[in-house]
Every structure is written in C-alpha cells, then in structure tokens.
Image (cartoon, rainbow, N blue to C red; front, side, top):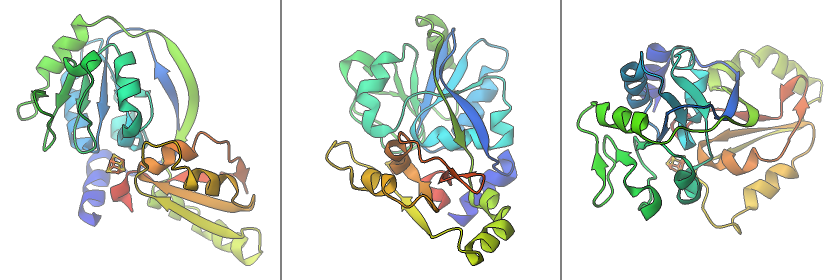
Length: 245
Ligand code: SF4
C-alpha cells in the first residue's frame, strides 16, 4: 500500500484539497469506477482531442485531488456514488461505463451492453478491454446519446494524509488548547442494505468539536450529511481510497 501510495504521488502529483462539481455536462461521456488510477490516466490520454468527458464513480473520486489528473481537460467530475448503487445509477448514465478493478456487480440488462471491464475485473458475458486499448469505449461514447447538463452539488475532496499533515502544527496546538475533542476514522466498505446505517448515524452524532476521517466507500453515505466545519477545516475529511489507509 505504501508503494502504491508513493507511485500515485510520483506519477500524478501530491493530492491537494479541491472543490469539484458533481453531475454531468452536455455531451458524450464515459463513467469510470474501481480503484485503478493508472487506467483512468491512460483513458484520459486516449480521449485527448475528442469531446468525450470522463466522469468518476465510487473509489475514483479521490482522482480529482491529484493535480496531473485533475488538470486534464477531459476529466469532468464525479457522477453518482459508490458501488452499492451501481445498479440504480448506471442505467441513468447514457454512455459507456468502465470498471477498472473490484466491486463490479453482475450488470442489469439496461446497461450490460455499455459495461466494459479492465485489468483483473470481469463479469460473465461482459466486454473486456484488451490491455490498455480504450478505443472501443471511446467509440461507444461518441455514438451513445449525449449526457445532459445536470448540476448536483459542489463537493470537497483531497484530504490525503499528506494534505492533513500540512496542518499538523495547527491541529496539535488546537488539541493542546482543548479545542478538538476527538478524531474518528471511519474506513472501509459499506454495504447496500439501508439498515446498515451504523456509521452514518455514528458520524451524525459525533461531537461538533471532533473530526471524522474517511477512507473507502463508507464515505458515500456519511458525506450526504452536512457535518459543517471546525477551526476553518471541514469536519469530514476524506483521505482517499481504501488503499490510502
Ligand atoms: S472501498 Fe471497498 S467497497 Fe469500495 S470500491 Fe474499494 S474495495 Fe470496493
């Protein structure tokens, strides 16, 4: 994990907090999910010069914090939430969907033809990307009905451990001055069942002078609640993918 983290930072730059626009913009698009930032980077490179917008889903969300990915003109923004909602969200996305790693579910008929898998990921009867050749995905994006201009919200990403350490001095001083009562880390994966709301409720009840750090898909439920700010920082700080732990 340390090697992967180092590789991500060397190749894509040190993650930094950033506001990103959730939703879609008018035009053709590809939705990318999974964990593989290298696949996302290669897809973006192959989209250069085309009008195809690339959207992130699930654990691709932290990609928007890496400068060399975030600055790419074809990277549009996050669209949708986490893997457990893919059967509801993928049918509503009119373009192709690329799964780059784990947590793909058996696709529903409504989007089976538009689902591609890459790397170690596959579904029975699904389309596989060969190597890193995304030309078929891009061709499909150009032939599918365009996406609408749809704004959902602005969201903040990028509290990778390096970005949080940049505030270490101020945080330690605040702890000594008893201005911060606790830090909670809510990491890992969340399940699809509505009843599995333990961490959502836990986060909502955390004291106003505490911070909540998240990793992995668990954040997608927790971040629907407005946790506000404390000492000028958002109380909910997403540190990135589960592998950033
Ligand atoms: S955080 Fe867990 S549930 Fe989410 S995509 Fe990664 S492995 Fe899957």
